[in-house]
Image (cartoon, rainbow over all chains, first blue to last red; front, side):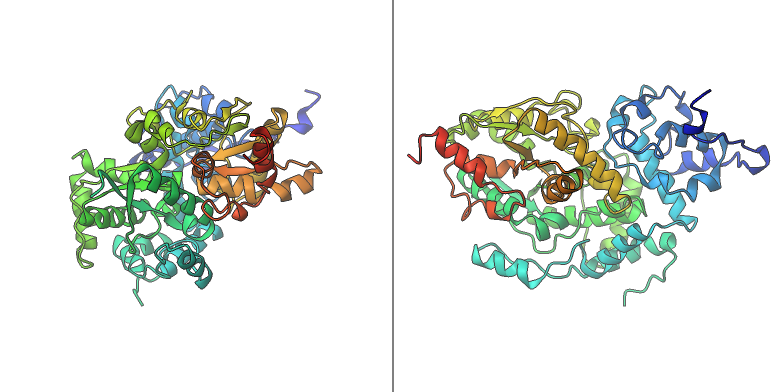
Length: 179
Length: 303
């Protein structure tokens, strides 16, 4: 008990704030199908390289929060964006919860519910503008030309059209104009 | 026509920040008889937006696959994230269980003149050297073995995981393909703590501090075993360990000075290519010269 102050503050969860349908919503999302199989063994938390340096990301905890129905806390959190996508837990999970894909499913729902992190929004914008998330400049093509390597297109403008056709605006809530 | 003819998929990071990777790849490919088809319309693979809108990320991937299919070639990748995402899309639609979704994507892409039929295979180039060209054949091209160098392999994540995507070509727990590819260059592939640790690149934009702490763990482990270099096969892993190394070292007041080389640069050195002109080692952030000096002194002073 002496180190109580060092550990996470105790939280109480009110049943009134829980959404029992949240777990079903996640299970319907591509990647989230196996969430209800979790028996909380903690293998994911034990092997997670992110948790080893930052304990605000804890996959076992996130899964419990979803199963309890803590919809708002999960979807509005920063921690769901901290999974580095390494698939270590995915490989080791004895219940095949496919946690890396599950985090993707939760993030997709979070975006639709209005929680798009700035960095992710920026990636979408860059992709629409250049067809890549980094901008190719004259410099790259000068270097390439010197070595006899084919130059790169500055913009793959078709990508904006692809994203709009695929309905990315339904997630990001921007208009779906190609212009 | 070459027996080995592939579209080389650069993706975003190699296009803009991995010229040393691309150039050295083109050099070693030419020596191994791998013909590259350049497809100018290739875009981002789609992976960076998978977390935002999965269906859009798949549509971007399928467009790339359709471009390769139209050229009648399979794809070799350099970036492990591109490898994972494109392989996922290719497998997804090749297995026949996702016909409805493929139909939907094709309908969306039809206006732009695309129809993907599901015939393209995607492989990371390192996997292709390992199982397609074969270790013996790659070794035949080694003319100046790097005997005496002790280098550490970094497998990264999406090259081998999730293993269900990669046909069992290597183990997700005890991988060996990169170790073996290193050893045929004559260098020693050394073991170190948490060898399979993730570079943290996936969350760089979201939490720089967290990813820097992840990078530091690996740099510390490499320092413990006195690695001459870290060998990477993904441009984002490279950014994390090479470009951020001086910053992390300065902040922690530790001198790491661990050169980070792409495997193609290491293999290129063993093939006798010129370090700067052919392998662009001058584009590596951490100086490679000490490594080349060590090699020279092992070989007896510039034979």
